[in-house]
Length: 227
Image (cartoon, rainbow, N blue to C red; front, side):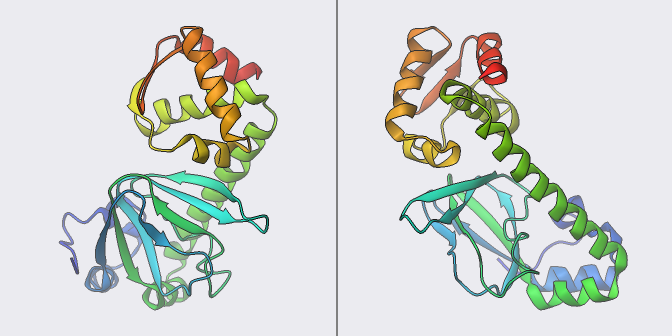
């Protein structure tokens, strides 16, 4: 899909209220939508940056390919998150990859249009900087929060993150594999499997395939906090 209905476009729900009607129409004219299936790569680390992109629907992981052959997940992003904001002004090439964790729609705007607006519109540029700073702060805070916890605390943190921040429900289908959880919290997949099994035996969670139900949120919160 190309273009957008300027009255309803989700761009207005982001930060584009600080642009003129003419500028907004230009953004709409260059906007494109692409659909991705779960598991599809949206951005490949090392690819040239040609577009400004944000998530319209779905869930994705941002991750870095490491020299040791492993991946490190740096962020889980949801609707209306800017999935390439960390690279577009610092480099010509993406410093991380993005893959869909569920069926996802990504919207793209011409990168040169965005750069021209940054040069000419101070309020627009300030909103971009603020969004970039918040995203960076979130990544740093999450990394520090995970690193200070023991193994059980890290798993509890991840389960509560999906329940509270992503799905707003204590029962949800886990969108990541045990291996991806391990990549997010710097553990081995074997430890992830073992601790999830311990939580299940302790009556803290129920597991039915990929579906997780948090049955004792209070205990899980204590483990996440004190871990």
